[in-house]
Length: 358
Image (tube, rainbow, N blue to C red; front, side, top):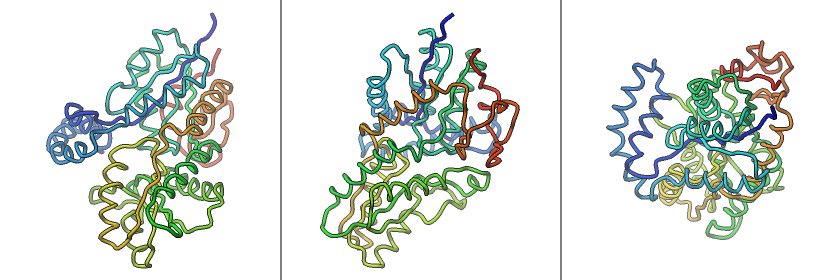
């Protein structure tokens, strides 16, 4: 029998309307609360019902999340760059269409092995790891837990990704009001410090992206890195983006362009947190000229990057890289629990879910 590959493009999800808000928050909280499912699920639902009315005005202010719509456009553009007979489906973590729906679509088209592409250039327990785990759980529920999958690793240093990011930065600088030199502030989503302490590679991959795109652009101006979206009482990565902006204001910096480096589409963190909250902060701090680079969206080089990841995955189905250090894993990877290069502990989906093609 001739094997048939398919592609699953995985993303976070976002509420498109009032009806999706509380279910979105409930699923999100169920995933992040550090309790067994029998506790986290009802607790997440309760907190979501209380928090929903508080965050709803923010979503209404931006016309609700455009993430899913943008994702659909990105996937459509990706399909145009691939074999027209190659099935491609989507799976969100916290809003429809979920991974299970995408997998069912692929199965209906006769797919028997999958390239799983995360819409997260940087690997984190909170993003790529979670999306892959959601997909693997759905595979087990559908009885296909042993179907071969090529899990695409982080691509934070992929030349085409850097091309796309550089293009958005140039656009952001051009759109920033005022004249004269601009100070770039890379502003990825932050993480609690407990994540990198457990080996999460996200912070170091973000820093490497910033360093590489600066070299890639031959940027001769100043730049900084701040972490946004801090919530809760626990310690997070620092400095925060507002702290960086405050320091720049004290230095008398007049023109600042924020770069949402980890975001491939616009959503609440860019359209409200940066464009509204941080813009107001900049005004109050005395930074007269404030702007932002757009998210990657349909940037041609980014879509080309995704297509290259798919083709590479299809061509190297029996070869895998560590999601943390990108070091190639030996053939015996299924019997190993840690990367021989960086000692990163392989997640369950990579230990149990990957089988080589027969």
